[in-house]
Length: 314
Image (cartoon, rainbow, N blue to C red):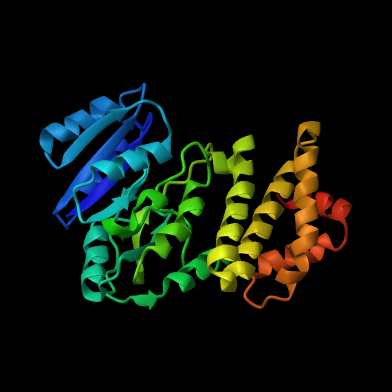
């Protein structure tokens, strides 16, 4: 059985569409764990109506503790051998779970990673194709941001065994997906990647990733933690971790250059100093993506030039 965990907070706008896509899956052996995270709108009423019509939907109401705590609670209540996550404003394509579980059965993979899209689709092309990669290669692909694996927890099927006390979501931080992916990969014996689009992601222009908030700075701490992890456990991945940390500092500095706020001068300086410290490593690393190399080249023109170009392009 697959346990589908759906954290929901004030999700009334798209929740019905989300639940319809899950309960309508061609793979029927599922339970849906909706974690109502202290919603104040009609989220609970919508979920209750669905639960009356389909006993596979279970509703749990918690205080407003955030998506990480909601996911952790869902994991603790899951009865399935497999776990997947769906955000309450997104949806699964009709054969998504069938495609993922078929590859899991064929390959004995502990994690099966599908593709996602932000273009609404009614069906997917079930290719039956897959590629097996090692946990270390999966980490490298994610850290180098090659596009093969996006550090998002949805659109992926996990064997429940990969979730341990050390691989739960860290509460009260943003970039929780980036913070957990390498720990989940560490616990996987085999990882399969499929080319099939299984997940529809709904872009939200008001989400924290598309707006300015001090919580964006969590990316700096998360990528520093990843670097420390790789340095102690997988030093061969240290260049990849440093490049990902460099990328986070590029992004935060570019964001802050749009805001002439003296409160953030110290963060700007720390970002710039790290960029100067790490840039040569990434410039001469053939695995680093072009976008990061261009950022490095611009940085050699000085902070003033970087500030000017950031305001023009960010």
